[in-house]
Structure formats: C-alpha cells, structure tokens
Image (cartoon, rainbow over all chains, first blue to last red; front, side, top):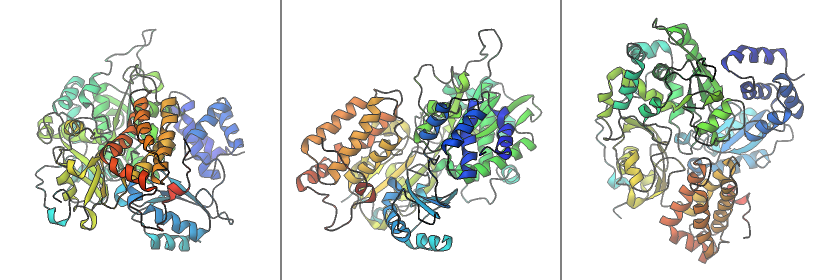
Length: 155
Length: 459
C-alpha cells in the first residue's frame, strides 16, 4: 500500500477546503511523490480508488504536470534552469559541469541512484541566475565551482 | 554609439516615489505577523476596509487606477465590479463566491511574487481579505507554483498566524465577516498562470485553459463566480486602502497608478527586484540596475516577461507603463525585464525561448501545439546554420496562423519573441543563412546544450 494512513489522514485534514473530491488529486500526488520519489502505475491506481476517479483522470493529470516523476529519480534530483535569464548568465556551463562530474546526461540517473540530472524551464529566480533546484531547495547565483563543491558535499 | 548603456551613461535615477510593496531597507523577519503588524502597519488596510461597504472598497480600488500586475494589466477595480452581487442557484439558494490568488509565477524573467511570498506573506493575506470583503467571497485559495516549496512553508505559517489572531476565519476583526483561505500547490506547468487553466488545475484537472465566455466572474472555480488576481495586485490593494487611493494614483501615470515590482535579469550589473513608479523609462531602469554588465553595449531588451516582443537598444526611451509599452509595440506584461548585451546572438536567444514555448504549450489547440513546435524547429535550424531564406517567410506565416486563433493567449505569446526578433534583427537571421553558421560564434565554440540535444526538422 502506497497510500498509507499518514497520507490518508493528511487528505482528510484538507478535504473540507474544497467543494469536490477531485481537487484533492494534485495534493495527493504530491504526497505520494514525497513518500515514494515518483508516481508509479500502482500509485495512480490507488489514487483513483481513493478519490473515486477513473484511472484515466489520474493518468492525464500525472502526465500533464512536469513535477510528477513517472520513473524513479535519484536521492538528489538536480534540476538546472536553462531558460533565457539563466542561459544569459551561464547555465550551459553548469549543465556541462554536472554532466562531466556525474558522468551522465540530462534526464539520466547515476548508477548508484544518488543523482538525477534534469534541465527545467524557468524557476522564477532570474535575478539570481543561474539557478537550480535540488529536491525542494533552490540554489542561486551559481558557478562551476559552487556546483562542483555541492556534488562533493552530497557524494 | 549613443544608445549603448555602458558605464559612460550610468546615472543615478531620481527616485522620489514612496514604496507600497517593499521597504527601502529590508526589515528582518518581515514575514512574521508580529513584525508585519509592529513595523509595517500590518492589517491596518483591512481594518479600514471593514468599516466600508463592499462598493466603497471597490470604488477605492477603481480610484487608485490599479491595473492587474499578472500580465494583462486589466483595471482591478473593474474586474471586482464584474462579480455578481447575489448569485443564486436555479433553485434560488445562494451561490458561494470564490477568490483565487495566482501565485503560479512562471513567466521567464519574472521573480517578484517569490519575493513577496518570502518577505510579505501577510500583505498578500491582508490584500486577499480586503478583496474577499469587496466581492463578497467566503472562501479563497492561493495557487502557488509547485517549485516554491520554501515559500509554501512560509505562507502556511503565515496563514496559521492570521487565523490565530482573527484576520482569517469567522467574524474577522469582530466585524461579522467570514473568510476561509488555503494554499493549493501547483505541479509544474507554465500554462497554469493563465487564469482559467489555473482554475482547472485547482479542481484537480489538467491545466488547460477554458473557452471564454463564460468568464470566471460568472463561472469560475468549481462552477462558481470567481475572481482571480496576481500576488502583487493583492499586495498593492493593501496600501491603497490604508493610505487612500489618491496616494497610489499620484504615482505612475494617469491611466495606471502606483509603483510596480520590476524584475531585472540578464546582462545588468545589479539584477533583482526593484519597486519603482510605473512612469520610469526603460533606459532609467537599466541605469538604476547599474547599467549593462561589464560596460558592454546594449543589444536588446525584453521589457515584460518572455512573451513581450523585444525592443532594440534604440527603443529604450519608453516609459514602463502599460499604455506606453503597448504603443511601442510590446507589452508591460509581468514586469520581467531581460537585458541582453552585444554578445548575445538574437537568433539563439529567440530559439531558446521558442523551445520553452514548445515544451509548455498545453496541446489543446492545434495551431499552438503544432505551431510552437514548428517555430522552435525553424529557429533551431536557422541558428545551427541549416536555414533557408524562405524559412523567414514561413516564420511570419506561421505566426499569423497562431495569434488570435486559439482558446487562450499562449499562442500570441509565442509569436512575441518570434516575430519581434525577426523584425528587429532580420540581418542577423540572414547572416546565419548566408554564412551557414552562427556569425557570433567563434570557430570551434561549442553549441549551447539546448541546440545540441534537440534536432531541427528538414522542411
């Protein structure tokens, strides 16, 4: 069971905030991902049963939003913004630096399942570009040496 | 070159304006209710609003000439006045009215809402409570982009504090006014910044924009009359109620009052969020941010977030209010100013933006789904030296088949960078085609990552 009592009680706690049950879908998927690291087929099925929704309604939501991982990711999910503002301030060098240091390309996970590297669109922190997100945390004003240091610290 | 904004032209801009959204010096712990109340006159605006009738509050906002800060620049007071007074179900029972805050900040180049959520979450809550009173809403949601995890943590704490001190919930400030407010976390979709896509997302669905009419004021969240405003709009309302609409209206221009948070990024010495009057010129704004980085020459500026058509270095003597920028053929949008210096290849910059739009098109309308994909490939092809002169006509033709042809304004947004870059820097496009490579790249220089990993199509 992916939908444990903790997740279920969290959903019950916010149920009264919404006029429909379907509105709980995004929060529920966030909880599932926080626990599992990704949203599996099995998790989607459990979510559809819990919220009394057709499986297709769950699947179409999971596939629409980029934050829901549809395959497992590493312990640290490094998401580098490469949109225009970060691009102008050197995000390309950061991506190259991570690819070299981790020996993987964007979209891949290291063999020890420690790091996943992704390229993402604007994170809304352009004033401190280039930026990236590692799991839930923003890292800003980056350069190659700060990225190297971060990987060394997390490795 | 008189238009370069190098060090020689750096000048101090006279900043006479008072601030409505931020403070000159950062106040520590401004996110807590105790500091907000003791140092920032917190909840004084709400207190005043609750002594007025709903119509009086709407009138105050109308008088302030506040225009929505999310991108469209629609007059806020007017938007509020569109909300039905006593909506009823067919059986005669009253319909609830909802209030939604759009905190799905995602327009490339925009990062002001993040600052407001981090430092002044109570200002947003206060602004929303004022708005809820004005439109008669009993419940509201703050839709925050999913990536803003830390901001959500701060906001949650602020909501708890506001409930505990009686600024939310039942019988607010003892005035018999009830308003429930909670957070909804998005999950990574640029299109959810479009208000009807946001409403679908809030209902637990795919964030696809809805056909309008009906507008959200009639059929909004969960089918009920709903008003959606941006974070900065709500925060601006607080100062308007507290200090009176005249103080706000006298800053800015005749048709758009107040200060605005300008988000300056790219090649400037001091990127960041700056609260400035709306009538500041783009030239002065760039100067205020220390001028172009490294004293280089300015090449182009995107003045209102990625979707706003670019301006060339010759066009920066324009005021940053909604009307002036529209007259200049671009838009004030979300206040995201992206500065590009002389080293930037415009084709490459536009190609990067189009890759973004290709990724973010929701896919409902074929013109947008196919068009954004096709444009991204065309720009890719030109930048990598495989372009053809007829591609330039294709770009223009594609754009004319997209703008105004779809359910929402996303397709129009795509054409912003595509058409403006081509129109203003056509020679650069032609040079790529005739030279068969990017003329700004040094021999042997590596192509950027996004070009390497995405193929262009043979048309």
